[in-house]
Length: 332
Ligand code: ARG
Image (cartoon, rainbow, N blue to C red; front, side, top):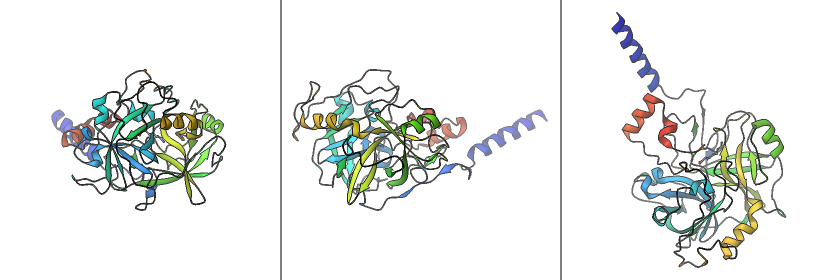
């Protein structure tokens, strides 16, 4: 009798563990968004690590914005693991496609990274100054973003609807692998820093910006990091934020936190023109192979360079232990 009960309990547990995500789970594209039209946002690029798996879908771990033919703007926390020449040699920037391939082929252009510049004052605990630049080994021909938000031209105010795009997870909690092959987008209103810290309890710096809905349901999430939050001004797209942080995803009263791009005009200019270089790479030309990373110190931590490998073993572990967060090593 006792053993039968035990078997029943175990069987019940296994059954429940394999149930699909319930209808009450927050799900959608990005979270609560839609698929972007092919070629609509040519400045949105995917950042891949070739050691994360065999396909682009598995290799992608962050997003970025093409701000010049050979420069990509991204988040510092995406680059935490890229402090050596070997690690950087595994990076690829994929442009010119909305689709991450699930085979060996690609529909876009893939280039290498010759240098990684992490903001010197990036703080991996507070996420202050969560900004980095990638110098590409080869110039891309895709359209770059039209402009960067600056203090003299912010291009938005509180309440402005901004768009965030990325290949991040489309469901939270991410109990099954729900990474999209197609670029997703969602529109979110910009929220004031005061409201954001009051409602979400975040400690905000002037270098951060919040966007989202108090009721939740729409947000960026894991894998979207580094990608742009942008607005349209006439026919011009202006990047105002970089996907950075947030408590879980799309939860009521928890807005998404973005790096406030307008604070970094001179930092970005300095890196691109080599004038405020930190001592490594001084070459802004295409032949620059100098590996110049700035490790801001602070505790190791996984960064966001987890693979999206859906191997059976990982899936079994995931279902039995509910250990998705541990397996995936991603930051929030
Ligand atoms: N840190 C995440 C990443 O590495 C993105 C966080 C965005 N979170 C949010 N709730 N908006 O991909």
